[in-house]
Picture 1 (cartoon, one colour):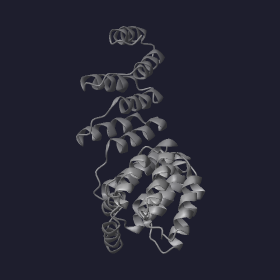
Picture 2 (cartoon, helix red, strand yellow):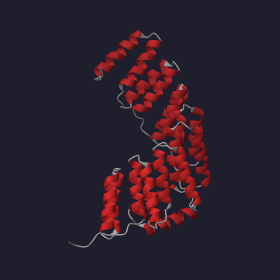
Picture 3 (spheres, helix red, strand yellow):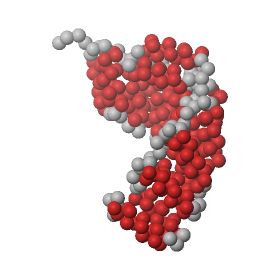
Picture 4 (cartoon, one colour):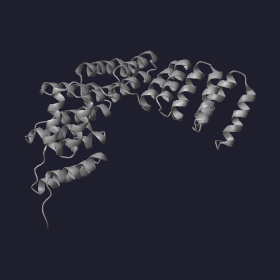
Length: 316
């Protein structure tokens, strides 16, 4: 029959199930591992909790957390971060915050992943003040995202000793929140159309030497669009291009939306033309936004020409 698999091999299989959010598969392999006489470690439990979180079932994750403790395993930072994320993904801010307090009470310090999860759930619920509170906490805590990522990799590989060493390194190091932290915060502001706050957090990210990504710029431009600030939206689009980050049809659509709200047909036409010259195929929404704007301005010839172009591009 050959040699029995060890805990690392079993954890690898459980992790495959967890990545797909297949709780039944993860639990089946956990039970099979136990039936073969292989003792699960805290990584095994963390992976099943992760599977529950990905499946949108935080209650099941809590059940496995309790089982982990009952079986004599001491929950790690990853364990608590997984629980916080499971509730955050479900939009349950109070439960996520409760797990953060439970984590702190156990003597463990929050990491950047825990704060990002809390910012995410506040953003999802349109709670800008809550998101801002946790973003400020993340800045104050001086967390190390790079080391935490290494910890996660070690844990998922079933290498608890390396993960533990990285944890110690994290506790003794000085670091900062990552781009995800700020992107989540800017996204929270964008959802409620708070351009001033979105730009404020964008500047704070730049001040820390962090490079914005496509999602960051998209969120700032979205905030400008909701506020109807076509000038600011266009400026951020230019900054995005200066940073050599390719804008997609959604970003251009947001800028066009800002122009429409500002009744700035001239700027909208330039943005539309720039989108085409950049090799981006305008969407039906982009065509519709521009058509409604120039129609509002009384340019019916322009509307007719735009309709012809739209049909020639395959939109009907």
